[in-house]
Length: 146
View 1: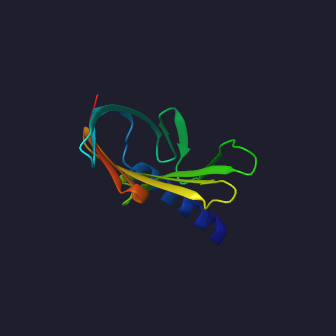
View 2: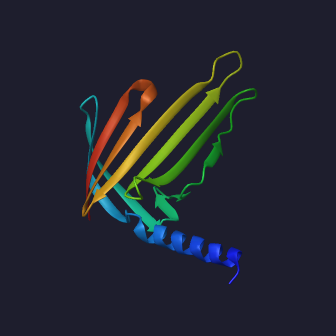
View 3: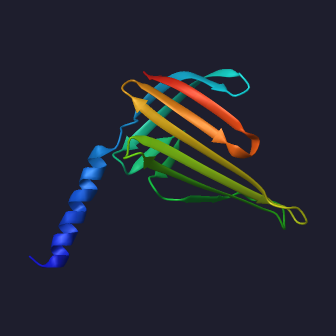
């Protein structure tokens, strides 16, 4: 067998093992969220997952590891663009969502907002932690699988 074919088969095997090893977040999760101001709210999250390839959350499809760029229509001379990515982290045990939005208007410095949310699953229990660094905002949620 030639070296290229051997390497291709090895890469496929590694890819298959990686797909088998990521945490399954699929399901409907209900729980409560509390922000750093003490405000508590009830929340439900439904997640669909296709192995380690795709996450569907809030009716949005996130191909794992691919950056999604969204441009929002704005007034002439203004710009509003957002970048999002969903990845498995910590040896595929946790799910991390990153979001950056940059808005600009003529004669003003751009406004940037960064969000990061980490999801962790432990059996029928899931936590999420959202951090928005510019405003020092933090929200922690605790969910149970329904």
